[in-house]
Amino acid sequence: GEEEPAPVEDCRPRTDIAPLITDALVAELNDKNWKVRNEALDKVKAIITNSAPIKSSLGELPAALASRLVDSNSKLAQSALNICEALASAMGPKCKNHVRTFFPAFFQALGDSK
Image (cartoon, rainbow, N blue to C red):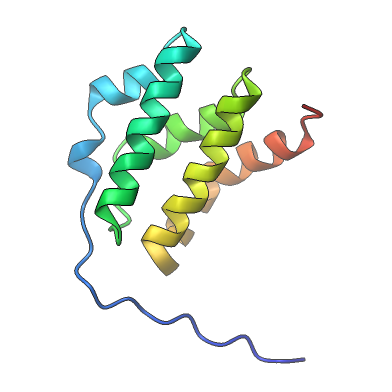
């Protein structure tokens, strides 16, 4: 088979976004009100977009984001999936560190008929 080209390591300094993932933001991601959760997802997306490339230290974000992947609101689940994609590309090869956190929720989300 053909060899996959090795990923090019991004040499720019990586931003540590863990300090930006505040307890308040995590609380918003887990809020009962879907509008609050949606706004929190928008904030997370902005943090990732404005900070890329990022370090693999994400604080409480992986667990909170994984629970949004299986959100009862399918639009929020889709948004969380898009954020995971942005996260992976902003983080590069180090995103492997978080596969165990996200994978079960990915499978659950993909198995959902919505």
